[in-house]
Length: 115
Image (cartoon, rainbow, N blue to C red):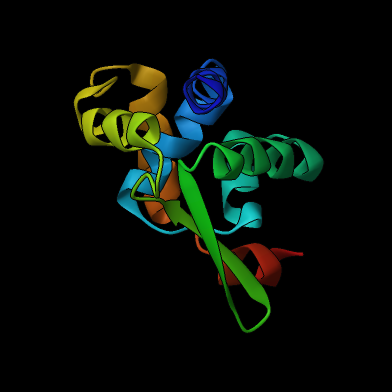
């Protein structure tokens, strides 16, 4: 039951759901997610850690970047089930639509070029 509760808690936050929907489209780093959601870096990192612990997202390092993507649920049947259903959810939500559009147009190179 612990894994089930962990997945449900991870999905209970609107910000985390928005991140998952963006990660459906492309792999992203914290700075890209931060640019779209306009949240503090520690907040994004905390959300990602919660979702990683729930086996909803996974990360891998690529040189200096840590990239996040949707997981496959790992050994957690609850995470796998939720990730399978995710593409059907919130596709008509204006905020999600806008986040996805922004995510597609947000690139880490541009973020750091502007700083």
